[in-house]
Image 1 (cartoon, rainbow over the protein chains, first blue to last red):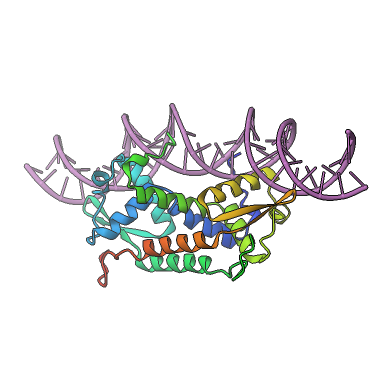
Image 2 (cartoon, protein in one colour):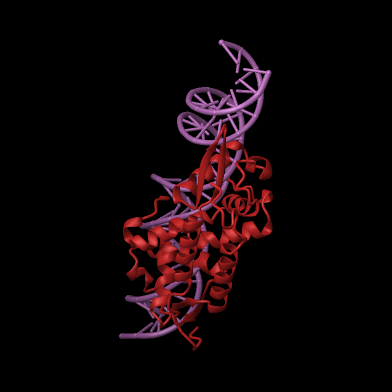
Length: 111
Length: 111
DNA sequence: AAGTATTATCGTAATATTGCGATGATATAT
DNA sequence: ATATATCATCGCAATATTACGATAATACTT
């Protein structure tokens, strides 16, 4: 069906999965890394850097912006995208919490 | 097209995205959390816990096992799944490294 | 051996995602 | 005002994902 049965899961699980989706496509990963690297928060010279069409990049940027992990400001005719640092840290914390959930089989190897 | 153009991205970006995919669906998140919580590494009583069909759970487990984040052992007629702790930590480290990549606009707010 | 329980896989249907060309909107340059 | 550059959105095509029923395979029970 392709339909995720969100009602079966908790709010937390659904929203965490949405964050996971951010990192689940190499184009989005590449965009984030580019924004991190070019410490000028440069606009979509991304279209030149990555080999994807402008429309495709724009779509990925839209998704990233929807989650809040990046923000964009108008700069003349172009857009100036960059990492939303507060959100970045917030998301990092959420992942850390997830990874640090109390481990099953602590110590003893159960499998 | 629906085809991810993997050849445009680095090995690192592609493999990181594959890890991200693990966390991009609430069912997989729920499965992982269940395995973490029930510190008995219980088998697919998951089918009872989550409201999904057995076939669906089995499919998600297969994906999780493919990445290595869980491992399963035969226990009579049933399967005993649990978190692969080494891999769990390894993945945690990879995410930490990703989040700690040198920040753009360090200090100054550029946008 | 026959029946039951558990799980993996196959096939299918429905929806989601990815990607791009075309188009429109806006801002700058001439 | 017209041309150019940049970006967002629309519409489409192709592939991927999600979900499940049906079926097979395995192990245990009686």
